[in-house]
Amino acid sequence: MKPTIVIGGGLMGSATAWQLALQGESVILLEQQDSIYTSGSSFGESRISRSLGPQDDIFAYLQIQGISETQQLIDFLNEKEPNAHSMEDIYRTSPVTYLFYPKTSEGIAVFNLDKADTLAQPSGDSIAFAPDSKTAKRKFGLNLSDSLQTIREYRKYSGTINPRALIEKLHRAISLTGNEVRYNRKVKQLKRTDQGYQLAIFDAKNQTEVVIEASRIVAAAGPYNGRLLNDIAPVIDQLITPKRLFLAFLKIKPTVYNRWSDEQKSKLLAGYPIIKLHDELFYSMIEQFDTDEVPILKVGGHFKRAPISDLDNVWKLSLSNEEMEWSIHETIEYLQMNDFNLQKEDIEFHSGYSCVYSLTKTEVPYAVNLPFPDGSFDQNAVLVGGMSGVGAKGTMTYGLLAANLLLGEDGPNDRMYQLTSRALGNERLQADLDELNSK
Image (cartoon, rainbow, N blue to C red; front, side, top):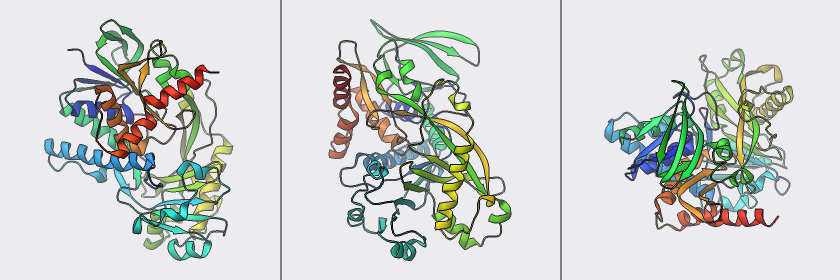
């Protein structure tokens, strides 16, 4: 029996391969990097983990269901390797802070906070809302102008999620089911055949090329999906657009940080992650702790995007002076709101790199069957992509959706699952294709 091939060993591909393996499928997961990743959309130690949203918000559901799926993964691993795995290996629980300017910030729509005051009511103690500067000072110790409002989300496993740790555990679990993860494998060509699919695969470690057959395939290659699917679904390249973003990593100088009291250090940790919903949408979180035990702050701008001329080499682009200056400025401004009297000279640039968003028109991801040239859908081929910079926290749910779609399963008889499946699935893709064809 030919296996199912999942192409792309990042978050989405790994989660989908795991869900397929869990349901008894024969799976091979292909990743073009070595087992220790050095770049890519899933590279790194932290992404924001949050579930704030209004009623029926699919992104809140993706997070909440994802936590449940992650717990199932941990339970499976501990059954095979007792007491070796925990949720805390993946999640760092910490308050998530949202700062926004009511009615003036385009970013509010991204997080559905246009009625922020109503979000506090049904969620009880898990959400705290400060509509003015006086309340923000009393509740959070923040010094804000009256034009800013604040929400803090206090939920178990809200805070940050570690992509590296999650991928490692997914790969371990896939292997424990008797399935394979193959590193250093680049798919050079993907074709349909009368019997399924044919993949020409280059083994970068051994410098060899082989051709293998697959009964079904999952495309989860991030920004490379368009190129990967050129021969079987070229329209995908018109529906998903890669854009460059930057990530900066900053440190408070050790000579400053080490003078702080334990209370000040605890306040810093409680202040991250942060999302500031202005037009550029500043976000920051603690990536990890350096060897000197000073936290490294990861900084980015969700809307600070640029076109890409060379996808293979965009990862190597250094940050511009403007990007570094913006990162430091936004960080200092936020730290001063927290009563840390810091100036530019108190912050040092640790490192930075370029990353890539795979953007759909609506910035809502896809979990869909690939279209045939005649417009019908291929039930044996699934795309999970176009994550638009919002995929990590819902990783495990995207994997569940993609696996169920490939297997022809309806999934849980749950209203939010079905709502999310439609929002990300074939109905949505058909509407996008119809719009594209009407131009």
